[in-house]
Image (cartoon, rainbow, N blue to C red; front, side):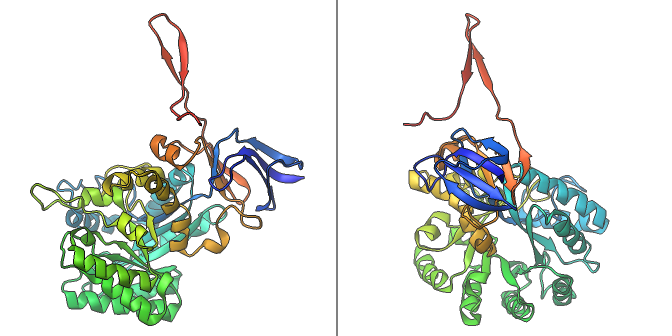
Length: 428
């Protein structure tokens, strides 16, 4: 007998409904009609079974601090950094842990089981880093959490920045970060990237750089990131996040850059919810959208995934932790309304994001892999993006960790008759 059986599930890769058998936290059978019973059984009734959503980029140390000590009234990245600088002195480990755990529960309810969080290390006490390491241990039984040492105020420009980065790595963070466009000079920005790659090699860690998150078309640090990835051989272990300056690059330079990005093998993360909000603040009309070239990079064979970046913090006053919201915004900002393009955004928050986090060996709905998946009331990728339903069930390593009853809407005519409304597009 299996521990858990999911029956009559729809999968993007199968024409027929399938049953999934789970034992000891792993998938042991996928079949059209399973005879084995389960201690616990769920009838999917034709709903969609997906690998869990992956959060490629978020800042869990700052979540749920919007308005503390004040709101970012200008809406700019730079005022957000200033507000966060004012909030940091009041951080405690308990404060960070409480907010981060709340946000992670929101994300879990929305089907996210793998998260990469950036944590500010420009703090002599590394309070947030120590707190997030405890959070990682707390959620380890049901969520994968990667922690990035993120120098919010720079490595070269912040007094003791390099030493704090290295101390965070010694404490156990998983990924080395950088923010070259925020350093005082271009030369210091380049120097910070060399420091980042040196530390990654020394401690055998992944790299994720906040790169060119500015509307300045002359900000071109991504070419240095990609070149260093090539020269060091780190390649797919390297990620460039944001790259919003790419929105303003001229076509000839972008064409040349894409060749380098492809050859380097690095991953690109876009954060459309936040960058459509923060970018273009210094423009008159027409105002730039400021989101990196998601569609063009994907079509050029570059791995692109999507992230939240922020939830209710100095940079973004909204959010509920839904990756479907992120994908929905990517479609709008990147003109990805073709049927193939809409479907691709689901891949950008599942297997493409898993590739960014380098967790592919333990990710996916395959026999032998961990039984971690989500069941959503929908028929296909298009349906999920259009309606954005909450998952009915979220399963982590064979255990149901979240469940949501689908909403029921009824319409009453002038004759008092009741009709149940289903917003799903009928299957053809």
